[in-house]
Image (tube, rainbow, N blue to C red):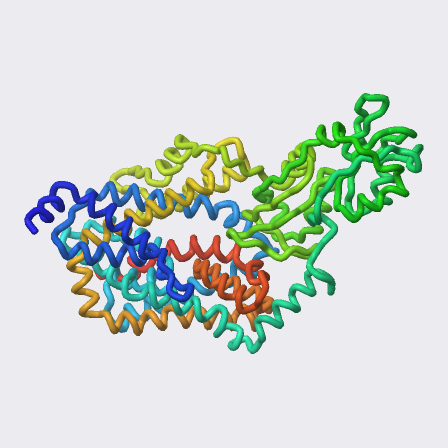
Amino acid sequence: MSTVRWIISAAPEIFLLLSVALGTILGRVRIRGFSIGTTACTLIVAVLIGQLGTFTFPSLLRVILFSLFVFTIGYRSGPEFFASLSIRTLAQVALALVLGGTGLIIVLMFAHVFALGPGTASGLAAGALTQSSVIGTASGALAQLGLPKELLQQQDANIAAGYAVTYVLGYILTLLYVPFVAPKLMRIDLKAEAAKLEAELSGGNPPQTENLHYRKFQARAYRVSTAAGRTVGAVEDEIGSRSMIERIVRGGADVEPHRDTVLEASDDVVIAGRTAAIVAAKPIVGTEIDADEILKALPGNVVDVLVDNRKLHGRSVKDVADRVGDAARGVFLRTLTRMGREVPLSADTRVYVGDVMTLVGSTRNIERAASQVGQILSSEDRTDIAFLAVGLLAGLASVKIGSVPLTLGGGGGALIAGLFCGWLRSRRPTIGAMPPAAQQTLSDLGLGGFIAAIGLGNGHAAWVAIQSHGMLLVGMGLVVTLVPLIVTTLFAHRVLRMNPVIICGALAGAMTVDAAVTGACEVAESQTPVLGVAVPYAVGNVVLTVLGPIIVASTFAG
């Protein structure tokens, strides 16, 4: 035991990394498809290891780790958050605000009735509302109060205790509420409503659209005979299905295929588009030919494009195609992905900033269309460390006016800086690169390390707090999780008149519980709940994160 204590005093970072590693491994364990999650497991492991001795970590380490995490939240949510401030998505924004506001009111009521301190109240909110970032913003706000070291440590321990007791309960309740309870509360059959929504989106037909949809995209070569004397545009329109003449070879030389270009007899042309349409083009154009060299010279591609054009936010696929106009010629939409989940496609499917379009077509055409939609995602991008450092610096900087220090502190500065930097990156794709894999790494390492430091540094006090207030926290956590969900469901259904399937996805998004979206999709036997996730998720991440300082300010007795 003396060896362990020596390591604790000499190299506590070993146990911090051990807590992150064990928490991550345990968080991945699934029992009948359910897992607690890495954050909760990391905290539980850290609190248990914290019983071995007294761990001391520099406050700077915790600040850096949490700032990386919350900056990444802002960076990831920035484009969607600012784009959500539009009339087209107002209902979904209102849903997220009602959920967060209701949760805040209930936590403050409990704090008043049971005389909860700012630490316990913040931990209750963080766990029951399943938003781990509240731990950091609340801890940062407490650090700004100039409390004695012992009292500050006790408050941090209370945050950890409140979170550890209520998070798993809040997570499970949200998983069960969204797919099972919410539909009953709205008196609907989720599966039937999802089928109805799919029919509405597809106009009563199987979900597909000819505007941008991809169906076995191919290219074939023809020798012009029937189409001689006609323009490229007239031939494309007759073939239909947005087929496009990609190349014209006349006398061995290439001719630019503009829509007003007139075809001549014996021209060799390459037509790209849906298989059924271009196969049927023979009587319109001429004889199909075996022209491998012509087809090889046509570069085809499948490219992921991040939607960041705010003018497209909340518009249908058909509207997007119309707005992109001629730039979309020869480009087909293969899939639309939101929050890592494929969205059902139809002409009326709504597109939001932050969605990823998988486009199919020639490289030239995709680049032309992508410039109107957003930015092409490249797996070779490297994180712009200078941009990241300057962004964090702007968020964490503190200045004095006279004797009054001005700083956002508590992670709030890093969050706002992240929101701005993410938005700026969407407007100027040439700066501030942070690929999705890098975002996930910074988020996981930042949050995991911060949570481990909290648990290790306050392990003994947190364990005592759990033993003293465990059952009370469980009861309060149940109410703080369920009441906001119930109130928000009724408000969205009866006041906002939102589609019930969209409401289920939006509830999961506002609570930032990805697994609840999966549960709703499984019950609905449809991907339509995903349609409601994006905007509430972005808004919920921001709204719930800022609850930490609000709760501390409202419950601190001085």
